[in-house]
Image (cartoon, rainbow, N blue to C red):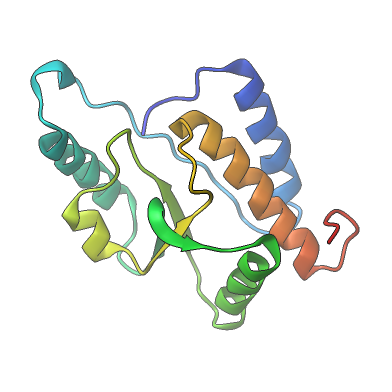
Length: 150
């Protein structure tokens, strides 16, 4: 949800996006912030954000929420999860970064899995960069390239 406003974050995301396109078809979709949130409860906001996500995600996509209550994986296990999806011929794998209050029940029901990148809390802008780097790292592990060190 929302635009990436920090130039250093955008530059990092652009760097890893270009690197990822060497391996896969990779796209980032930023959905516009919901308007008029000052008078909105967190539940209503999550619901409205969820509606936007659902409209954007194709019906046959496998959806993984990046959620604080998701399963924490190290980089090698995450790479194995990506590789497993490739072997299973998953055509579209969608990772979703939610808004400030997380996801609506609709999104949790739509999701196939939940992963957590850390037990710490990060802004939705920073987590995009961290995730882009981890996704690139996963593909370097899958392809036995010398980016990841144990």
